[in-house]
Length: 68
Image (cartoon, rainbow, N blue to C red):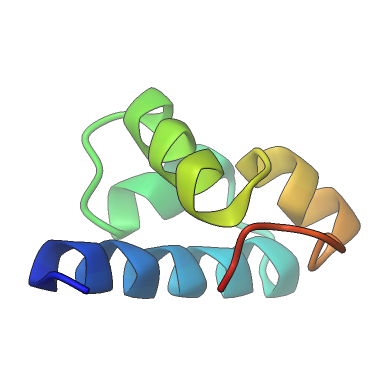
């Protein structure tokens, strides 16, 4: 795994935790993790976790997500 891939996965793990355990908006979480837009964050999140940030936050840890 490359350094950038590791960093992206780590950021999405932090994001997933915040989506499930905080009341922060997707936009606020994206900005806190260094993304300039909610759109860029959502695209990266979906690529890593296998679902949208909103779906992940609503359903908690979604069964069958691409988190391996």
